[in-house]
Image (cartoon, rainbow, N blue to C red; front, side, top):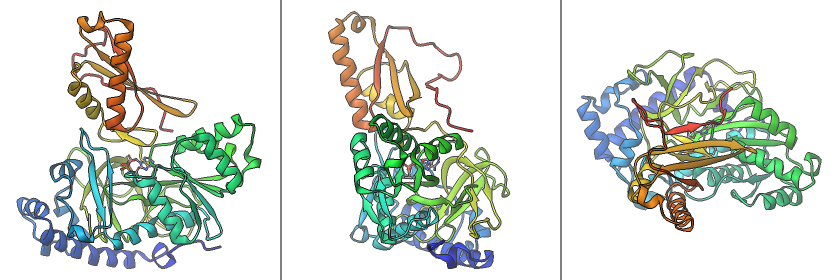
Length: 435
Ligand code: DLL
């Protein structure tokens, strides 16, 4: 069985990787400087010219990129190629009403497929496997990303997408799926439904699962492995960089190998922006060095982690990142969907509600739930029960429309949400997501 999808890269010497990175970085910097006015202005403001960036040691001279940059240039302002060369768009939550948009050329799609194919191969996937993809298909990168990797290997992809869990169970059983790709919380939910339908792991053929898009613990890994009878692998990625496949776990399960021939990783102090030595915890920053349409440089992921270098017991030499240990911002991930409290606030205000609200996130039966409690005025509060329930439903529909997830709405009496003397406590997250 093939152990690596691209052995020359995955087991390359450090010199080979660094030489590739140097060459690709300087070419990318030149290209964005010439093709993206926004980057040119940012580089000019930082007093850096493309010829100043010759090797990865010069990377720190470049300004950082932020989600805000995507918002300021919405939708296509950071694209480095003409639209006629863009063959795919994806999008993900912005911090307020608008999504952030990314584009891919044909070549970018090939790179993406390759990155995911490496992850699938590391989990033991070959062209004989049946890959059941329960990540959402659509603007979210999970479904089509996993699908592209499976196709690249020549495996059989089943584009089930997420939802309708009983049907997922039937398909797993009847179609003989051998690899499951979905969020880890959904994997557990599928497992529970399997057993609730009267089946066990012996009725299905899964051997591996590739789970990501949200934080999960090693305890959760054990539970999933036990219930579904498979080996569970982590996969990391973000829309702004490429989607799933920025980093992937191997059989050693001691961190995720970063596809360093495509993405340069740095760890920085989130407060000062200073680059930290390997092995130190900090914010993870990526630069894309092969992408054509959306080659974002020094992107602040807001994910906190540690980079580990040195050859892995699997034989790969690509450096590894730990599971993200948290975020430097307030982004929540609800059933794999990114949600910012500020998006919720935008909807509340637009719908005429007050900014006295609280967001309660919980997990039961491995299913994330989100409740928005919002205070209403005494006039509204004295409405009939029916009137209040209509209002709550309308607000819930508006939230679903913008966030893409169902939120329970509770309309609260005036002055019932605790006031804070300092920063308002907007989010109460009752889930235990870290080890
Ligand atoms: O979640 C891409 C993806 C799809 C990754 C399928 C893996 C599998 P976004 O929706 O842009 O992209 O969300 C990116 O999700 O910054 C992390 O905070 C979080 N995240 C992604 N993978 C993991 C993981 C996709 N394995 C954000 N563990 C990232 C923990 C993860 N958090």
